[in-house]
Image 1: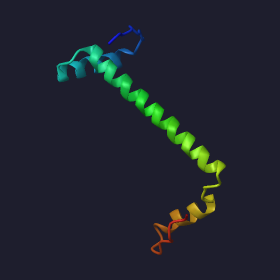
Image 2 (image 1 turned 60 degrees about the vertical axis):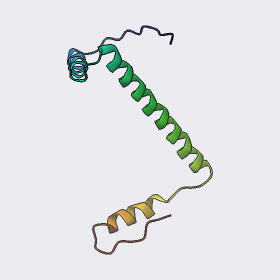
Image 3 (image 1 turned 30 degrees about the horizontal axis):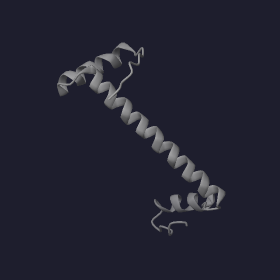
Image 4 (image 1 turned 90 degrees about the horizontal axis):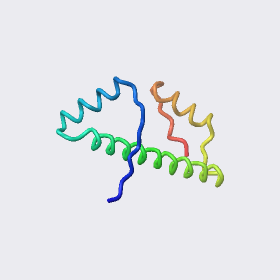
Length: 86
């Protein structure tokens, strides 16, 4: 696989944590960094997908009134739980 070197300045405590994890897992610092970066990118892509899905729901009118959610949430500790709003 073709690769590219990326450089980043990180705070020393974070660098120490990376080094400690690399030692613990018996992996290189580069391997740890690749894993961390890949996971972070996956999370950001999923966040974007969920945001777009939520915006599409709003555009289509698939929303629940805030007051209905508030009333339901307040009923959770009141003994008489209301049905979930939909």
